[in-house]
Amino acid sequence: MSTPDTTGSNDSGRDASLSHLPNHIRRAIEITPAAGTGERIIDITTLGRRTGRARRIEIFFYRAAGTTYLCSGAGGGATDWYANLLANPTFTFHLEHGIRADLPARATPVTDPAERQAVLAEIVADLNQPHDPGTIRPTRLEDWADSRLMRISFRHRP
Image (cartoon, rainbow, N blue to C red; front, side, top):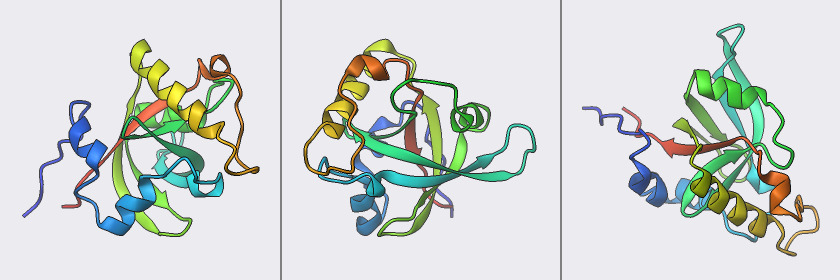
């Protein structure tokens, strides 16, 4: 028996709790402000826009407002991963540091200005914490205003 895929943009309740994931994986994703840069790095596997073949891309993930996000960071320049996920929103989220897991996921672009502002403000505040000298330290929210931002929902395995 398989569980229906209900990972559309209205599925924020399940994504926020991550309750369908095993506890050790859920804890690895529910990253805290004390987490260093290395703990925020994952690989995603998505289809290449030009080749159509699976491609792994290293990227940072963040937790904000109880939800998981991928974000391009300060500057907001065009990124291959964002273009790939717009074209192919279903992908694999690879946890690689500490806990290792390959999780089926779906990306939804965050375009609502109020949501973007709230999420980016929380990400910047988190990264500005003095907990880890190696962490990226954006000092101004306005530097992140044009960041590419995707909300991630994790799907049940069939």
